[in-house]
Length: 306
Ligand code: MN
Image (cartoon, rainbow, N blue to C red):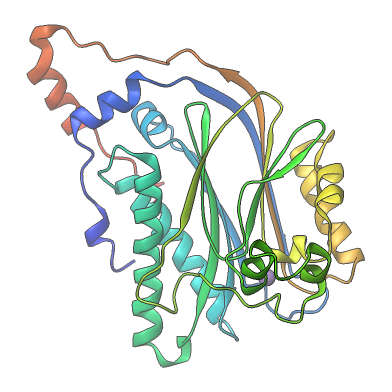
């Protein structure tokens, strides 16, 4: 792709050492599905995931799971979703910041700039854009980043907790107490989103850190799931079965309610949490130069080089 020149900054040795020294890790099971629904002619939703094998990258950046919901008509929304997810992941893994939340926000900003520049330059893509919600699993924490009305939830044995707040007109009215949750569900303006990637030169995502516990299920989805289904129904369908079956069941449920939009769901089930730091780096006092050269020479992991 073009435009990856500015998102290939090196991870410095000191940052990677700091990141590696402080974290345990989780075991997880991931599954995702996307579906056309019953009304639309194109699927403008997309999901993707990145699971680096290199232990340094795994410790500093972790695994990344993302969902996007495109808009713009014809093929434009589909292209926006795909471009945004690729640019987002490339920027995240190439970014130089040791701070995960900052790296995620910067990756969203760079993905936005990439989609924005493309839609300005190509007349048939004018106005295209997409939402984005992503979870980076780093150590024993999840870092959720989002722009738009695609959502993340944490589902436990007895609760479902929204991790995101919709960037939408209805969401703003709801939080301001102007409308009720019941009114929000059927409001004629519920499709109007106030933040997304593409249409504007800049976007400010929200980022949230969530400590993980064994048994937690993180669910990322587009509004094609949350429009037809209530939170309690989503939780009931997500629990107690393998994540791949849960994804299928959730999509079937949304389609049984008419499938008015494309439906995408990604599930991350936390199977175990190991709080012990893995592979801690403790260089001997005189090992500075050797460590530096080893880390500098190690090929950087990139989602484009799989
Ligand atoms: Mn949608």
